[in-house]
Image (cartoon, rainbow, N blue to C red; front, side, top):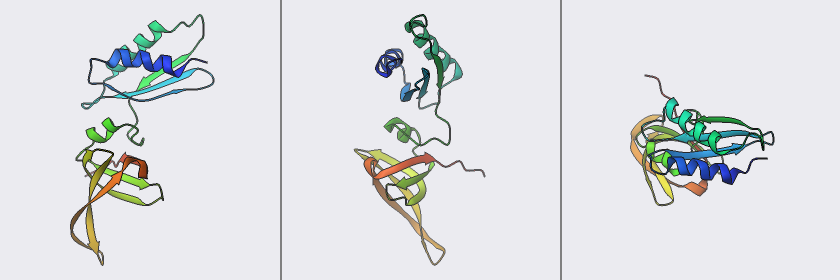
Length: 150
């Protein structure tokens, strides 16, 4: 099986001087390598292709065969790294805490070991303004962007 650390070093060496960040690397028992990358302005297909070519050029298929997929995380995937939180400031997110409570609001900021979202205060079904809720990264199960259609 291909070593995940070797793949991570290859990805890191390619993205070192770029505004691209690594979200996740998965390697299956059948050597299917999945690399998720992104950048604040959104990663392009051409950038994914360049990363893929860099990885392929530095791994030996004669020694160990593999399948390689480089892409951005899907819109419905939970955030995995701090950079994803930072690039989604100002957007609607859904937070599910470790106890299973779901909260939806606008991601306001990311600081230290957590983040804040702004939610609508309601009483008896009526909007009573806004309030900010703070979360520590370790206290949430998932956070993902909520796709909204106007």
